[in-house]
Image 1 (cartoon, rainbow, N blue to C red):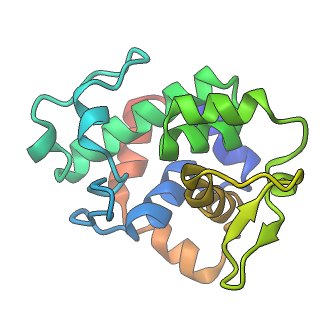
Image 2 (image 1 turned 180 degrees about the vertical axis):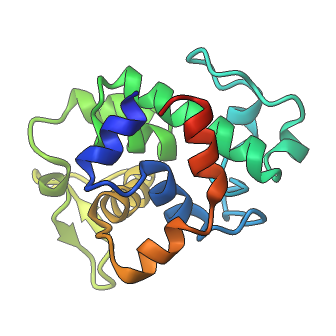
Length: 178
């Protein structure tokens, strides 16, 4: 149910489709520099031992490249993160991208919105300092644009067309009653 609520909060475009588009551009063979693979960019350790009552993949090396298994697993994990953070989409996306431990660190120090947290950039436009001038850790430098792009994606013609590219998301959502 939280995935449905989150999608509604984001203007109707499925949160799952946003995660897929941001992570893999809908390429089931996509592989990140850090080793996340598939449509929903699943890391091998997460696939094998996700925790949070999410069913592990049987064969993480192989299953992460299977679009159906990858998407179903990613949806379960994203739902678990939304539940863990009481529907807070920003925290759930940080946890999905950088791990729940890092999301907890952010949550413990957050007394302002995500967008206010990041404000100083270096000459290349990389966010390097928080509002107090402290260096932002590497995980946060990566997660900040990831979260903002997912949350800030507007339903443009390109994104609307992308929605039709992954019928599995719609089918899987129907199967789970989302």
